Length: 145
Image (cartoon, rainbow, N blue to C red; front, side, top):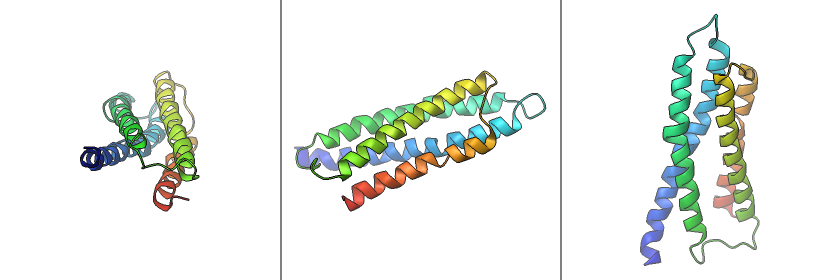
């Protein structure tokens, strides 16, 4: 039975990861626009606030939860992960860091709502964090070092 369910769990995991990553790539970009164009002299911030809130709550949070649940199911499948190797540890650490970045983004959304934020340049730099973590995760899983 596990052999029948495993490919579906893996496919669901990949779809959840793609959805989560899309949000993690896009949300800091919205923060750049919000920080640079919003405010008293700029565009109305209401549109940025709505896009950020929906991206976080409707796409990113459910995708993160689905990624974690499906990933844990895959890890618990016997014979899939060899914990004596380095790759599962680097992947796990990177996924935890990605989750931390997700929560950092949620906190930045709150700060933007309160009128306090980083600069557009700082958000551009933070936009590279999920890319670096994704590289470590993909290399860990594919190369299995």
